[in-house]
Picture 1 (cartoon, rainbow, N blue to C red):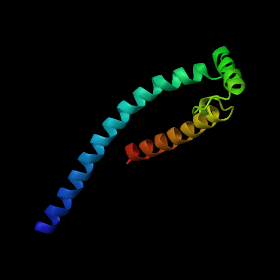
Picture 2: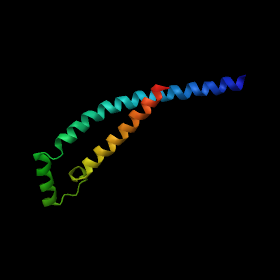
Picture 3: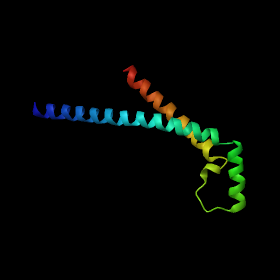
Picture 4: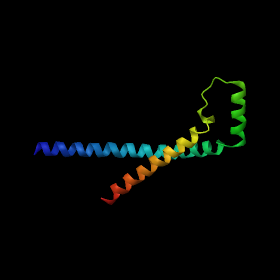
Length: 96
């Protein structure tokens, strides 16, 4: 009997930890959505092209992955695939 109680207590603890992480993740999604909107507005804009030109001309020694032609596009594609997978997992979870 005590083994069964301990086993199920672990399930409860694990579930509560999952809920806590889910709440934190949901907040992170809200935060990153705003940042992604700003990033995607910048990508391909007049400012982006101006920054790219200046970066290339001055050979600046700074991290500038944001100026990569594929960097932001690839990130968006990877994010979309990840979110689709998450949506599938959530749907499967809710359907049970």
